Image (tube, rainbow over all chains, first blue to last red; front, side, top):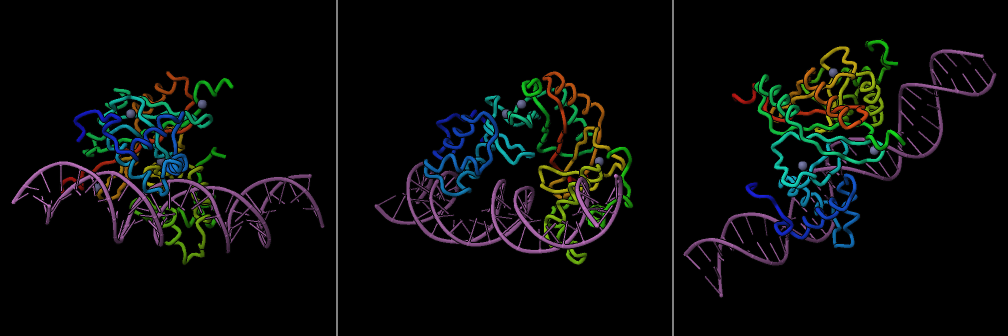
Length: 136
Length: 136
DNA sequence: GCAATGTTGTAATAAGATAACGTCACAGCC
DNA sequence: GGCTGTGACGTTATCTTATTACAACATTGC
Ligand SMILES: [Zn+2]
Ligand SMILES: [Zn+2]
Ligand SMILES: [Zn+2]
Ligand SMILES: [Zn+2]
C-alpha cells in the first residue's frame, strides 16, 4: 500500500480537490475551511472532506496538526511518515514549517524503548513566533 | 502569578472540583466527561468546566493532551510548564505517562534557536502500546 | 459608598468529527 | 453475460468539543 509515492494520478477526484486546496494554501486549513472552498466543486458535506483527508494522511501527503485541528500538505515529497516529524507553528502569521531531525527522532525512540513502549506515532508541535514575525 | 506552587487552598470551588475529578481518574478525561461527573456538584454547563481547566492549565496543575482533546492531572507536582514535557499515551488502556527529558528539551530548543523561532509551547505526544498492554 | 476586577451561572451557538444508510463503478470470477 | 466483492461517493442526521454573549454576584481598594 505504501510501497510507492502517490502521485496526482493515483488520487480520486475528491482526493485531488482536497489536495489541491491544501497545496494552494500558504498555511494549514481546517476540514470545514476546505469544505467551503470546494463547494463550487460539488462538495456539500464534511464527510467528503474527511474521507479524502484520511486517505491523504494515510498516503503521507498530508499531515494533521493536532494542536490546531487542521491539516497541511507535506512539504517533503515522499515523507513516508515513518520518520519523526516536527512542526513549528507561528501563532502570528499561521505559517507552518515542517522539519525532520535525526537527533530528535533518535531521542524519542530511545525514550519509548526505555519504557518498553511500542511507538506508533509521534506528534511534535512547536508553537511560537517565526523569525519574520519577530522583527515586525 | 506563577511565583508559587498552587495548592488546594488557592483554588476556587469549581477549580477544586475539576482538579479532584482529574486526580481521582486513572487516565485523561474530556471536558464533557468531567462535566458529567460533576453534575451532582451543581455543574450544569461546559463553560464551568472549561473555565476551571483554563486556570488549572495556567497554574501548571493540569495538562491538555492535544491529540485526545482531553486533560490530565500533572504527575510532577510543581511542573512549572517551562520544561518540555512529553506524554506517552497507550492506545489500548488509555494510560498516560508524563515524562521530562533534558536531552529532548535541549534538542527542541536547539531546533527552534536554529530557525530563530521564539518558542512558546511545545507539544510532544507519543502514541503506542504500553509495556503492560503488550504482554496481554 | 463606589469602581475595578474576577468568579459564577445560563443560554445559545459555533466548530470539529462520526454514524448510518443507500448508491454507484469497477475488477475478478464463474 | 451474470454474479460478487471492494472501494469511492452522496446525503442526512447526530455526536463531541469549544466559544460567545449577557447578567448576577463577591471581593478588593479607594
Ligand atoms: Zn511530511
Ligand atoms: Zn510568523
Ligand atoms: Zn506536569
Ligand atoms: Zn496500556
